[in-house]
Length: 282
Image 1 (spheres, helix red, strand yellow):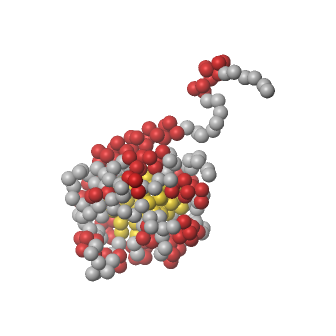
Image 2 (cartoon, helix red, strand yellow):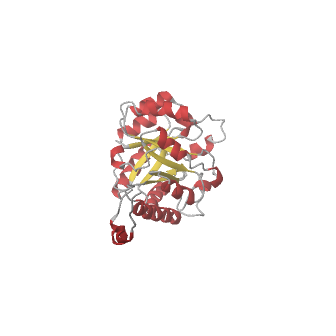
Image 3 (cartoon, one colour):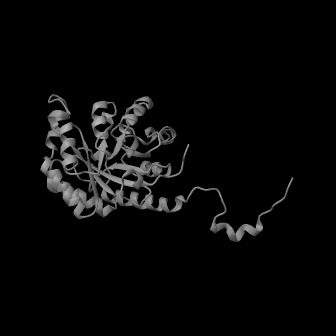
Protein backbone atom coordinates (compact mmCIF):
# COMPACT_ATOMS: atom_id res chain seq x y z
CA UNK A 1 0.00 0.00 0.00
CA UNK A 2 1.30 3.44 -0.94
CA UNK A 3 0.82 5.70 2.07
CA UNK A 4 2.58 8.71 0.52
CA UNK A 5 0.39 11.72 -0.11
CA UNK A 6 -0.39 12.75 -3.66
CA UNK A 7 -0.23 16.27 -5.09
CA UNK A 8 -3.69 17.82 -5.38
CA UNK A 9 -2.78 19.83 -8.47
CA UNK A 10 -2.06 16.60 -10.35
CA UNK A 11 -5.80 15.93 -10.07
CA UNK A 12 -6.96 19.32 -11.26
CA UNK A 13 -7.43 20.75 -7.76
CA UNK A 14 -5.81 24.17 -7.61
CA UNK A 15 -4.50 24.04 -4.06
CA UNK A 16 -1.08 23.87 -2.43
CA UNK A 17 -2.59 22.20 0.64
CA UNK A 18 -2.27 18.49 1.23
CA UNK A 19 -5.92 18.11 2.21
CA UNK A 20 -8.80 19.74 0.32
CA UNK A 21 -11.74 20.66 2.56
CA UNK A 22 -15.19 20.99 1.01
CA UNK A 23 -18.14 22.67 2.69
CA UNK A 24 -21.11 20.73 1.32
CA UNK A 25 -23.86 23.34 1.22
CA UNK A 26 -25.99 20.95 -0.81
CA UNK A 27 -29.61 22.01 -0.28
CA UNK A 28 -29.10 23.63 3.13
CA UNK A 29 -29.94 26.99 1.53
CA UNK A 30 -33.62 25.96 1.58
CA UNK A 31 -34.03 27.24 -1.98
CA UNK A 32 -33.14 30.77 -0.86
CA UNK A 33 -30.53 32.46 -3.06
CA UNK A 34 -29.51 35.03 -0.45
CA UNK A 35 -29.04 32.32 2.17
CA UNK A 36 -26.92 30.38 -0.34
CA UNK A 37 -24.66 33.44 -0.66
CA UNK A 38 -24.40 33.73 3.12
CA UNK A 39 -23.39 30.07 3.33
CA UNK A 40 -20.63 30.64 0.77
CA UNK A 41 -19.39 33.66 2.68
CA UNK A 42 -19.49 31.73 5.96
CA UNK A 43 -17.58 28.76 4.51
CA UNK A 44 -14.92 31.12 3.19
CA UNK A 45 -14.62 32.73 6.62
CA UNK A 46 -14.21 29.29 8.21
CA UNK A 47 -11.30 28.47 5.90
CA UNK A 48 -12.87 25.84 3.64
CA UNK A 49 -11.25 25.36 0.24
CA UNK A 50 -14.50 24.90 -1.65
CA UNK A 51 -18.27 25.04 -1.49
CA UNK A 52 -20.41 22.41 -3.18
CA UNK A 53 -24.05 22.55 -4.19
CA UNK A 54 -26.55 20.14 -5.77
CA UNK A 55 -27.91 20.93 -9.22
CA UNK A 56 -31.05 19.11 -10.29
CA UNK A 57 -34.61 19.14 -11.49
CA UNK A 58 -36.78 17.77 -8.69
CA UNK A 59 -39.02 16.05 -11.24
CA UNK A 60 -36.03 14.16 -12.65
CA UNK A 61 -34.46 13.40 -9.29
CA UNK A 62 -37.39 11.76 -7.49
CA UNK A 63 -40.96 10.63 -8.25
CA UNK A 64 -43.63 13.09 -7.15
CA UNK A 65 -45.03 10.51 -4.74
CA UNK A 66 -41.64 10.16 -3.03
CA UNK A 67 -41.50 11.45 0.57
CA UNK A 68 -38.48 13.59 -0.32
CA UNK A 69 -39.93 15.20 -3.45
CA UNK A 70 -41.46 18.11 -1.57
CA UNK A 71 -38.18 18.91 0.16
CA UNK A 72 -36.22 18.69 -3.08
CA UNK A 73 -38.70 20.92 -4.88
CA UNK A 74 -38.63 23.51 -2.11
CA UNK A 75 -34.81 23.55 -2.14
CA UNK A 76 -34.41 23.66 -5.92
CA UNK A 77 -32.42 26.63 -7.25
CA UNK A 78 -32.67 27.87 -10.82
CA UNK A 79 -29.85 27.46 -13.31
CA UNK A 80 -29.43 31.23 -13.29
CA UNK A 81 -28.96 31.09 -9.49
CA UNK A 82 -26.00 28.75 -9.93
CA UNK A 83 -24.40 31.11 -12.41
CA UNK A 84 -24.68 33.94 -9.90
CA UNK A 85 -23.45 31.80 -7.01
CA UNK A 86 -20.43 30.64 -8.96
CA UNK A 87 -19.62 34.26 -9.78
CA UNK A 88 -19.94 35.24 -6.12
CA UNK A 89 -17.70 32.38 -4.99
CA UNK A 90 -15.05 33.43 -7.51
CA UNK A 91 -15.37 37.01 -6.29
CA UNK A 92 -14.49 36.04 -2.70
CA UNK A 93 -11.92 33.43 -3.83
CA UNK A 94 -13.40 30.10 -2.80
CA UNK A 95 -13.81 27.18 -5.22
CA UNK A 96 -17.35 26.44 -6.42
CA UNK A 97 -18.69 23.20 -7.83
CA UNK A 98 -21.79 21.06 -7.71
CA UNK A 99 -23.31 17.60 -7.97
CA UNK A 100 -25.34 17.27 -11.18
CA UNK A 101 -28.16 14.75 -10.92
CA UNK A 102 -29.25 14.64 -14.55
CA UNK A 103 -27.94 15.29 -18.07
CA UNK A 104 -29.52 18.72 -18.35
CA UNK A 105 -27.98 19.89 -15.08
CA UNK A 106 -24.55 18.62 -16.13
CA UNK A 107 -24.84 20.36 -19.49
CA UNK A 108 -25.67 23.63 -17.78
CA UNK A 109 -22.78 23.35 -15.32
CA UNK A 110 -20.52 22.64 -18.29
CA UNK A 111 -21.74 25.87 -19.89
CA UNK A 112 -20.53 27.65 -16.74
CA UNK A 113 -17.11 26.01 -17.18
CA UNK A 114 -17.12 24.33 -13.76
CA UNK A 115 -13.73 22.80 -12.97
CA UNK A 116 -15.02 19.88 -10.90
CA UNK A 117 -18.05 17.70 -10.44
CA UNK A 118 -19.20 15.64 -7.49
CA UNK A 119 -20.80 12.27 -8.11
CA UNK A 120 -23.30 11.20 -5.47
CA UNK A 121 -23.18 7.68 -4.06
CA UNK A 122 -26.57 7.05 -5.66
CA UNK A 123 -24.94 7.31 -9.10
CA UNK A 124 -22.03 4.88 -8.61
CA UNK A 125 -24.01 2.30 -10.58
CA UNK A 126 -25.45 4.81 -13.09
CA UNK A 127 -22.87 3.81 -15.68
CA UNK A 128 -24.25 5.81 -18.61
CA UNK A 129 -24.16 9.01 -16.57
CA UNK A 130 -20.63 8.19 -15.35
CA UNK A 131 -19.51 7.86 -18.95
CA UNK A 132 -20.88 11.30 -19.77
CA UNK A 133 -19.15 12.78 -16.73
CA UNK A 134 -15.87 11.17 -17.75
CA UNK A 135 -16.17 12.83 -21.14
CA UNK A 136 -16.00 16.28 -19.58
CA UNK A 137 -12.33 15.79 -18.72
CA UNK A 138 -12.92 17.61 -15.43
CA UNK A 139 -11.94 16.56 -11.91
CA UNK A 140 -14.50 13.97 -10.78
CA UNK A 141 -15.07 13.39 -7.06
CA UNK A 142 -17.13 10.26 -6.41
CA UNK A 143 -18.63 9.17 -3.09
CA UNK A 144 -19.01 5.41 -2.82
CA UNK A 145 -21.58 4.90 -0.05
CA UNK A 146 -23.64 1.68 -0.43
CA UNK A 147 -21.27 0.35 -3.14
CA UNK A 148 -19.11 -2.74 -2.84
CA UNK A 149 -15.54 -2.96 -4.13
CA UNK A 150 -16.44 -4.48 -7.50
CA UNK A 151 -19.03 -1.76 -8.16
CA UNK A 152 -16.47 0.90 -7.30
CA UNK A 153 -13.93 -0.73 -9.62
CA UNK A 154 -16.43 -0.70 -12.48
CA UNK A 155 -17.29 2.95 -11.87
CA UNK A 156 -13.62 3.92 -11.57
CA UNK A 157 -12.76 2.17 -14.84
CA UNK A 158 -15.41 4.23 -16.64
CA UNK A 159 -14.42 7.53 -15.01
CA UNK A 160 -10.72 6.89 -15.55
CA UNK A 161 -11.12 6.29 -19.29
CA UNK A 162 -9.34 9.26 -20.81
CA UNK A 163 -9.56 11.11 -17.51
CA UNK A 164 -6.87 10.76 -14.83
CA UNK A 165 -8.42 13.30 -12.44
CA UNK A 166 -10.55 10.96 -10.36
CA UNK A 167 -11.09 11.22 -6.60
CA UNK A 168 -12.83 8.49 -4.59
CA UNK A 169 -14.44 9.37 -1.26
CA UNK A 170 -15.11 6.72 1.35
CA UNK A 171 -18.67 7.31 2.49
CA UNK A 172 -21.26 5.77 4.77
CA UNK A 173 -24.73 6.61 3.44
CA UNK A 174 -26.44 6.86 6.82
CA UNK A 175 -27.84 10.21 7.95
CA UNK A 176 -26.46 10.73 10.51
CA UNK A 177 -23.67 8.15 10.77
CA UNK A 178 -22.74 7.02 14.27
CA UNK A 179 -18.99 7.17 14.92
CA UNK A 180 -18.75 3.42 15.49
CA UNK A 181 -20.16 2.87 11.98
CA UNK A 182 -17.69 5.17 10.19
CA UNK A 183 -15.49 2.25 8.99
CA UNK A 184 -12.47 4.49 8.38
CA UNK A 185 -10.29 1.45 7.66
CA UNK A 186 -11.98 1.43 4.24
CA UNK A 187 -9.70 4.35 3.38
CA UNK A 188 -6.75 1.95 3.45
CA UNK A 189 -8.62 -0.55 1.26
CA UNK A 190 -9.37 2.17 -1.30
CA UNK A 191 -5.70 3.22 -1.30
CA UNK A 192 -4.70 -0.38 -1.96
CA UNK A 193 -7.06 -0.76 -4.91
CA UNK A 194 -7.04 2.61 -6.68
CA UNK A 195 -4.23 4.82 -7.88
CA UNK A 196 -6.04 8.10 -7.37
CA UNK A 197 -6.81 10.64 -4.68
CA UNK A 198 -8.70 9.08 -1.79
CA UNK A 199 -10.84 11.06 0.63
CA UNK A 200 -13.88 10.90 2.87
CA UNK A 201 -17.43 12.23 2.68
CA UNK A 202 -18.57 12.37 6.28
CA UNK A 203 -22.09 12.11 7.70
CA UNK A 204 -21.37 12.15 11.42
CA UNK A 205 -22.49 15.27 13.27
CA UNK A 206 -19.05 16.23 14.59
CA UNK A 207 -15.51 16.90 13.32
CA UNK A 208 -13.65 14.05 15.05
CA UNK A 209 -14.25 11.42 12.35
CA UNK A 210 -13.25 13.62 9.37
CA UNK A 211 -10.13 14.70 11.24
CA UNK A 212 -9.25 11.05 11.87
CA UNK A 213 -9.89 10.38 8.17
CA UNK A 214 -7.34 13.05 7.25
CA UNK A 215 -4.87 11.49 9.68
CA UNK A 216 -5.48 8.15 7.91
CA UNK A 217 -4.48 9.71 4.59
CA UNK A 218 -7.76 11.08 3.22
CA UNK A 219 -6.80 14.09 1.07
CA UNK A 220 -10.29 15.35 0.29
CA UNK A 221 -12.75 15.90 3.12
CA UNK A 222 -16.37 16.73 2.38
CA UNK A 223 -18.57 17.88 5.23
CA UNK A 224 -22.18 19.08 5.18
CA UNK A 225 -22.33 22.70 6.26
CA UNK A 226 -24.59 25.17 8.02
CA UNK A 227 -23.84 28.56 9.52
CA UNK A 228 -25.00 28.01 13.08
CA UNK A 229 -26.48 25.34 15.33
CA UNK A 230 -29.95 26.91 15.27
CA UNK A 231 -30.11 27.13 11.48
CA UNK A 232 -33.03 25.08 10.13
CA UNK A 233 -32.02 23.14 7.03
CA UNK A 234 -32.68 19.72 5.47
CA UNK A 235 -29.26 18.25 6.28
CA UNK A 236 -28.95 19.88 9.69
CA UNK A 237 -28.37 16.61 11.63
CA UNK A 238 -25.25 15.80 9.56
CA UNK A 239 -23.96 19.36 9.16
CA UNK A 240 -21.30 21.25 11.09
CA UNK A 241 -21.35 24.94 11.91
CA UNK A 242 -18.98 27.75 10.95
CA UNK A 243 -17.36 27.42 14.36
CA UNK A 244 -16.85 23.68 13.93
CA UNK A 245 -15.56 24.07 10.37
CA UNK A 246 -13.04 26.65 11.57
CA UNK A 247 -11.82 24.18 14.18
CA UNK A 248 -11.66 21.31 11.67
CA UNK A 249 -9.69 23.38 9.16
CA UNK A 250 -7.27 24.46 11.88
CA UNK A 251 -6.67 20.90 13.04
CA UNK A 252 -6.18 19.59 9.49
CA UNK A 253 -3.74 22.38 8.62
CA UNK A 254 -1.78 21.55 11.78
CA UNK A 255 -1.79 17.90 10.74
CA UNK A 256 -0.39 18.85 7.33
CA UNK A 257 2.59 20.50 9.00
CA UNK A 258 3.47 17.47 11.10
CA UNK A 259 2.87 14.87 8.37
CA UNK A 260 6.45 15.04 7.07
CA UNK A 261 7.91 13.38 3.98
CA UNK A 262 7.53 9.77 5.11
CA UNK A 263 11.10 8.65 4.44
CA UNK A 264 12.85 6.60 7.11
CA UNK A 265 16.14 8.44 7.52
CA UNK A 266 18.17 10.69 9.77
CA UNK A 267 16.33 13.99 9.87
CA UNK A 268 17.90 17.36 10.76
CA UNK A 269 16.03 17.40 14.09
CA UNK A 270 17.92 14.26 15.18
CA UNK A 271 21.47 15.22 14.20
CA UNK A 272 22.53 16.60 17.57
CA UNK A 273 21.68 13.32 19.27
CA UNK A 274 23.52 11.17 16.70
CA UNK A 275 26.68 11.09 18.84
CA UNK A 276 24.92 8.92 21.42
CA UNK A 277 24.05 6.13 19.01
CA UNK A 278 25.78 2.79 19.67
CA UNK A 279 27.17 0.94 16.66
CA UNK A 280 28.65 -2.53 16.77
CA UNK A 281 29.03 -5.51 14.47
CA UNK A 282 28.09 -9.13 15.08
